[in-house]
Length: 354
Ligand SMILES: NC(=O)c1ccc[n+]([C@@H]2O[C@H](COP(=O)([O-])OP(=O)(O)OC[C@H]3O[C@@H](n4cnc5c(N)ncnc54)[C@H](O)[C@@H]3O)[C@@H](O)[C@H]2O)c1
Ligand SMILES: [Zn+2]
Ligand SMILES: [Zn+2]
Image: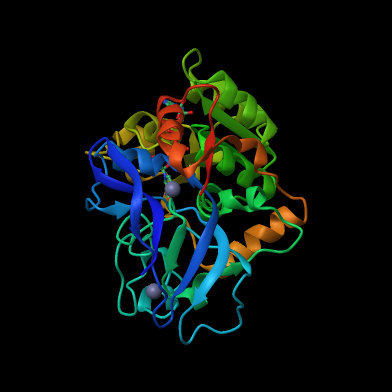
């Protein structure tokens, strides 16, 4: 058994890059040599103890790599091919997958809430030299030769999630859309709303750099929630409320603001991860009689999702490279966590090169 370097979670605020066993591909699995990955906001939740995972787990869930081993039954791929693997790895065969709910995959049987998210959650993740990919046939997406690793790495999670906020919200040509929070997820939701044909996209945040980036990603108007009554301003801009409000933070305030700035019959598309209780004041949703829709989405994964997203990059519809603000080697990942966690130095996303 060979060894590899990997970023291992040992407990709250205790991650260490160390030597661990290298994985090998069993039936239906593949091993990739990771060439680029990133640190996600969710990894911060894990390290801070806000989202529990087992000590000893390698974290990270945004992998780009080269096929190193193919297990029995995985066909149509060659060793050495470059692949992108989504953060969510559906089996493609369970009731959830075959009903179109890939992210709630039940691993060959029924439905399991958040069951599709396995890397760096219930299985070893991508902040390592090598990564074991489960259900490889459903999850290895070949990268077109003309695309570089840094052009596609953010499609695994951030862009797939952000775009899905606009897709699940059912944004239509001509819609007005408000996106609450312009972190990496919200910025991609902003880009997604624009891609889907919104005629007005309003990006809300309290960070100058991020509001600037929101404009670059497609926002027509940006609002700083620290100095503006955002609900009143959005109602003024839209003559009564937006068609779709996307929540991309996971707090009472942003959820409530998203609800309050919706027109009757509008859709609140929620992406944030919440904790504790979420309250719904009756006046914010017309006492339940406003024909509102509230939808939630976990990042869509699987190789077809990745193929489609890579095509949007290849055809020049989107360029996510401006969001990759910092790069570190795997051995320097602690420094990356520091900058990312403190939101220092204009950071948006940190790339890691194992
Ligand atoms: N649904 C999914 O599949 C999925 C996937 C990944 C992450 N997430 C979740 O998405 C959320 C956003 O992730 P991220 O990495 O973009 O977050 P982030 O922490 O990088 O960014 C959050 C942003 O919110 C802004 N903000 C704070 N208070 C605000 C307010 N009151 N109004 C408007 N903006 C405000 C901050 O300035 C910051 O720019 C998190 O809850 C994360 O856990 C969901
Ligand atoms: Zn993530
Ligand atoms: Zn499944």
